[in-house]
Structures are given as C-alpha cells and as structure tokens.
Length: 402
Picture (cartoon, rainbow, N blue to C red):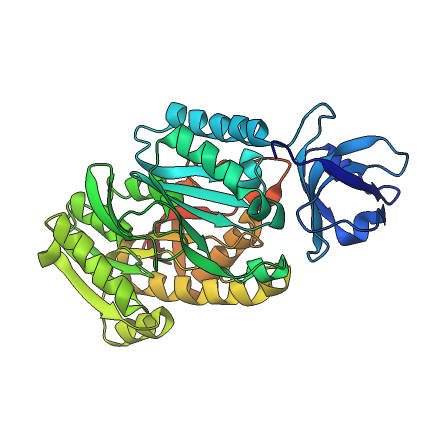
C-alpha cells in the first residue's frame, strides 16, 4: 500500500471552522455534526464545514476527544510515504539551518512541525520517538522510513510510555522499533558532555528545549554557590560549573537521576564541586532555609505541575511555594533562574505568580533574562499548545536593600 485513502467525510457543526481555518489542527468531538458510519481509528477523513466547504484532511479517532487531527488543508494531497517524507525533510532542514550542531536535537515537534502527535529526538545515530496519536501510530512505518533517510539514524527507540496514549485507545509501550543501539548515549552541548538514558530518563532522555536558557547562566554563574532543584541530568548545574561556579548543590527525588547527574559532573571534570541531595524539593527548600543556608544562584526546573486547565490553580500554588522559598534562600543580589513547562499556565499567570511570591517573600525582582523553548521546539502561532516553556533569570533583592 502506497497511500492512505480517504475513508469518509466528517462534517462540522455551524460555526466550528474559524479556528481550524486559521491553522489549528484539532477537531474536537463536540465540533462534529456528522461523521460517516464505519470509520476506524487512524482512518484518513475529509473534514468539511457545515456548508460542505473543505477544511482539510486528517486522521480520525473515535476513541479520543480530539476526534480529528488535521494533516493538510490542501485537497490535492495524497497521504502516503511521499507526504511524510516531505514533512520530515522540511523539519530536518529547519534544524540544520537553525542549530549549530544537529547530532543531538529534536527533529520533529508534533503539531508545530505539521505532524500532529509525533515527537522525534536525535541522539547521535539513535532516534527516540513518542507517538501520541492513533494515525501516527498506524502509519509510523512510513514515518520511520523518512526519519531514517533524512537523519541517517541506524535505530529507532519508542518512548510511547505516556498515559495520554490510553486516551487515544493506544497501548503504553517502549522499546526498539528498528535496529539496535546503546540506550545510554553520550551527547555534547556547548562543548559539555552529557550521558543520556533514553530508556528510563524523563521524556526521551534529555531536555533539548532548555538549551538556550542553560547558556544564559554563563555570565552570572562565575564564583557562585549554586543550588539546582529538580536537576534530572544536572545540565543546568554542569553549565554553571563550566562558567566558573565554585560549588554546585543538586537535588532530585529520583536516585537514578542523581546518579546520572553526578556522572555528568564527573565527565566534565566537576565532580569535586557537586553535592547531591535526594528528596522532595519542597521539603528540601524549607530545610535549607531553616538551616540558614544561602546561595548566589538557585535554579528551578520542575516538571509540569498542570496537565490541563483544571490543574492551573494548584500548579500556581506549587510554583509560588518553590519560588518564594528560593527567593528567601538567595543572598542579597543573588540570582533566581526559574521555569515552568506547564502549557496551561501562560506567561501572564506565571508572571503574576512570581510577583505574588516576591511580595510575600519581601523581595524585589530585577529581570535579567527571559527565554522560552529552543529553536528545535518551534511554536506555531495558530496552536497555543505548542508554546509551553517559560524561563526567566531574576536578580533578587530584599525590600529596603536598594
């Protein structure tokens, strides 16, 4: 089979099409007025407005609240190997154009690369993929062909082990899809070496999205006493050490993550600077404050506290708690490098939370740097969900000290 034929028509309710015509690829179940009977998960369907005008072609899934994920707005396109090859080629060429080094990077960033429900990260000759939609799962063989051809990868490892797969009617799974390679890969970022565990590390093993933000630490980390909470691979801490930090305290709740973090410090010659602290970061920050510890630079890179809109209020409480505690632990004029990867928490809400935390901590914040996700994690303006990472560096002063 060299194409995925259009299996039926999905017609929208009146007024449901403006967002889709503007470029958003998700058709929700409540927006569908009529769908042909017998459609199966992963079928290609033609989406029409209520007046029968074509909106686009996409993958249908009766199991998901996102009932259709649009692939194209063009009527003359055939969904098949050539289609996916062109999409992957476009994404890969963009990385080659924008990044200094493409040996380790994100190759495909889902909806923002016009391949909804697919993530592909490159670690040397190994590709690690997350398949988050039924259509991508059904036709992944074609996509895998294109990924291998474009990147020269010799193996593909699946990290489709996320709970959202169940909402798509898909099993949770991980393991090699094609070929074989070491699941522990050594990658290089800005001349620094990092060991990555693609089989059991968070997400696909490494957070490429924070690449630019890690480099932003270099002008402020010299001579600093540093605390990195939620350290994972300790990529921020290693960058701070490379910039001349004199002491690095790293914290993670996962003992496996701490072991890997210490190994990354060793690989770069900074093992003597590192103090590893296991446990819950909320508890640790309170304990350090009670013990009278003070730092020049504190880095907070927590996991997503909100998975959906219903979790925003609780997430903001959590973010406020850790940022308030960190502000109190800083020496006057110290730096707070803090982030949020919770997409439902937008910039205004996040900025408001930081302002509230500063007020309650009796601190003033000077903005030093604001950043987001790196260039291999593009943002599609029609898809707000593609913009998720918020990062800032702030100089922190006690009220009355200035």
